[in-house]
Length: 637
Image (tube, rainbow, N blue to C red):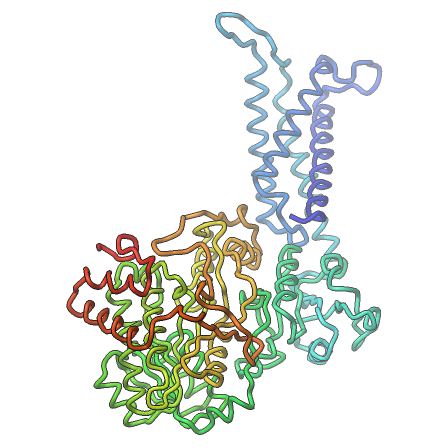
């Protein structure tokens, strides 16, 4: 709760104390227990106790009003539900007071001793009169906010939505022009906010630039805004996050125009208003692919994407359409996922050169047939098992799919003289503590060892966690928030490098144009994001308060989970590349086994898996991963 909200709550509590005290005293007067004329003792026989009476009444009623959430409501939208809450709180308080006063109206016996601290009896009708007065006065005080708001701005149920626009640039001007021109528009612009001093106090289509974005809460209240619209397509994630969360805390919804990258990618139109999404509040700039280079690289070429029905694979398909490939060969073992992406490319993007192939990448016979028939020149290998806890329970499946599947696919690619092959790896391959990370590290090492074979260039790109990919923490948090909580966080100090699906796809595409000689690349992702802070921001984005409306619980790290991930090991260093958003990973001299040694170890690991020789398997894994502990990292070892 910010300072303004705290002050507002304090003033509301003080005003309620005045109402509660007044209604209690007036109840005594109406019952004839107070004489205003001709008697020095106004309260007759209650004068010595009236302070205690009033104190108990005030404390009980303020406590119940707080418990019933009357100090966390936005009263300009007051409704029958709010009135019911006031009634319930005061009724509960009155019931408590009746119990207190009538229990304490008799002497109490303790250890055989009669201790008389009884309050004098007073008529029960005082409670009833006090309850009615408090109900009328508190309800009137709350609903007066809505009453005067409607006099000033109109009934929110019948009038247009009053919109405060953040950004007085071209996009903001266009939005106001459309809102004012269309008679049936559901929006009424009430003002602009902009940090450009030259725009302050100016008017655009008659709508005033009210002030800076830092004063947003003040202008929301002044203008009676129902919604805040971010009309800055180039706005940073940091600004979107700030505006969205502050708007929610002020009791109004925040919406936005699409980012420039959504428009460029053809996902939406520039002036199509949408809700704020979690991608908008990451606080990091989006990757910008070098379009001219990409067109020369992909135009009129056959490109094969494995895992094409998955979150990242399908996004790579969408992104590649901009560069006019001759055909997209989409391989996935899930027919349902493959159906959806093929249907989307056909119907939404009018792209008919997508070829869906239902196949397992580890099936060399099938893959040889696919490569021979469609002759792909570039491969994006996104197919993988990625769920850490699930792979801990199925380690053989993880290694067979992620390592042995990659090995089989790479051999077919070499046989068919594919020019470029991009493996989508994971930051969990760095000093792996789980089987998923181990399987990805094995795949990385294999591609490094065979790089350059018959002209095929293998590139590896490491991702952090990808927002809203299947099974991601974002989707889990969303489901938990929508169901009323609690939101489960593994540890308050857990952090992750997080990127959007769009960034992941663009990174893979950009890497395919840069890579040479088995290089590894990572996105310049800035600082890792604290998962607890991410959960709190998501709860706020839904207009609720963490630990009040939605509880946050700590479940402890799962099997194989680290508190934080790394982009490079101590044997690697990050160096800048020609592309500002991407780092190359350079291995330190003498840190890696020679190509032949690596091939032999990986060959032995594959054979160990095939014949279930776990004793030798664990020994071979330790040659590559000295910290490998089969008791912790291999299920039922």
